[in-house]
Image (cartoon, rainbow, N blue to C red; front, top):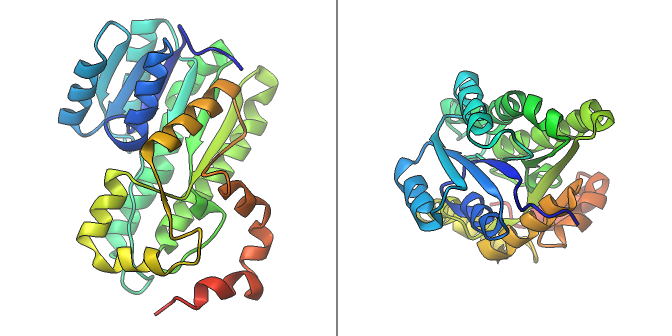
Length: 265
């Protein structure tokens, strides 16, 4: 297991939720942090809480390549380079294909897919110099489809394959690439979705076990940090999500879909 002490770690979506939890844990282990987000207030609050000279924050939109290139350049200027990238920024949109707002779908693709590409494109030159590690935050949704989540499923499946392709491109240069896959995590994103869309909470509650359970941000943060330290190919949280990866070919068969179809209204 490699120590992250003294390494520079670049995290998008670092203001809240899993991104902020991972940042806190990495900072405690001695890492330098460059945190980007669009949400200025919680980002500044986290910077003030962590304190010291090892945290730099940038207000940047992952949908804009120039913004990510500027953030990456700032990281290099401040800390000399980038050792680890965690492409974490992401949003969600819920609703059937007939009900979802087409513009919401477009925005989802821009943030969740193009945002990952822009993050990797901007930071990769420095990561290559450092023979570092890239962790792309996907989801259980890349392994298992769910009704009402077609747009989200599409984006998370896309970036899982992006991670796999990127790994093939850079492994010979000493860079490792992983993808992270979580079930429902108790983040502001999930809590806000429950509050705004009562049908969302109802959908989760009706899913078969263990798909109807949520995991704490703390447990997810610890799993991500362990994945970064070990430069893992896959980070699964909770651990049973890794079983879903191996069952992926079965989950889209009639047998695999049956437990979920029972709960479709």
